Image (cartoon, rainbow, N blue to C red; front, side, top):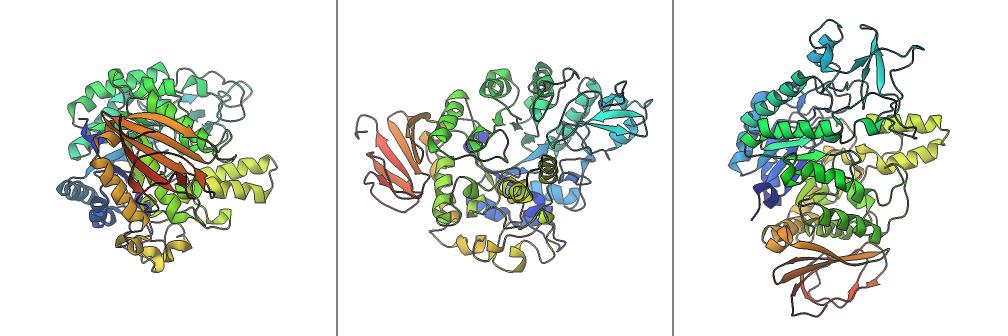
Length: 544
């Protein structure tokens, strides 16, 4: 009925934290190969592989120094080719991370561009200081602070929307786009089935004028979702992607629904799907680090907007940049197992392609660190420094960062309860959560009541249901604690009921219980704490 990427479930691997095969404490490609059977058993048919290219790791691989080589920490090109081959034998496709807004400052292009006479000078965005010696404009970046760094070698500033070791590419230079096309063809020819496109809606800077004054990320109006950006995506589709059986999903910064439609509606011939962030920010103020009270009705309103607003959604609750969802919208203390299953029920009964992040399928939680010294994440460190300048007390800075740091999702995969969590026999690159002793894959693998078993059932349920994959979406009811929505196709209708609270709530509804995270067989119109139920109804049959 749909494209292959609409039929399958995607499993995201963050390589350095997935499986270490050689004891150096860093996950690697041979380690991934050794776990392909677990991914297949889960029911996933696509792997999204976070960057494995050569990189000095200023931003954990999102600062690429060579797009055509594998980071020795992760293995060799021969290992990568074996991964493609082994995945293919299991009918698992692999999409790569395409990071083309910026490179590493250690990339050969940038090193040569530091010479003003070099043909690579215009691969990046260089500008002279203002007459008073200040940076070329007032823009501030996503990792806080100015987007400009003075290069002593060339005497000019270069632009970087992210870390200073991540200089932005210049898409006003057509040679840059031709380089990107060559990179894409290289990996598609190797066996990649598409790309997750990093911060893909900010790659084209229309002007370098000063930005409107705002507390953070000043200058956004000059580069977010610009027409030049759309032209680039259409050209990549026409010249590269349309010649392969592949798909693209774009990480889209601060995108609204109308901008998303322009990026991914089929007739536009740009991206196939986009990652938006609204649904993970209903309990956040302005930035991810400032909390407010969660209300289920607000989440349903956001989900409804996107479910009904886009032809097809990329469905995710976690990734390498987000806190663990069971610690975010669930209850990871009193109802960890039940709320992890509730969130799986939510994700797999929405319309779109589901993306599961490593560890999500066993209910991994946020880290249990005690101080900033235990963190690796450059964003968290920059946010802490900014808040310190704002005189926010240390205890409050740590409270906010502990809740929202990207390192929450980057702690090593918890395979077993042994020392090293079955991830490594060495010293892990990032601390392992102590709860791995009881919260791990091995404990759950043969337990029919586990979070892992429930994920397998939900994935199988979606795979076997045209209604869950392609049915229409309709909100039914919601309040601060619970929500209900329906998926309908033809005469079949599924109703999902979710209680996001520790209280028992009334939710009258008729129908056959298709699945429930509490294991009940019949529904009596009341939801227990963190209970999730999917009912099957026949249009014109059961009363609603």
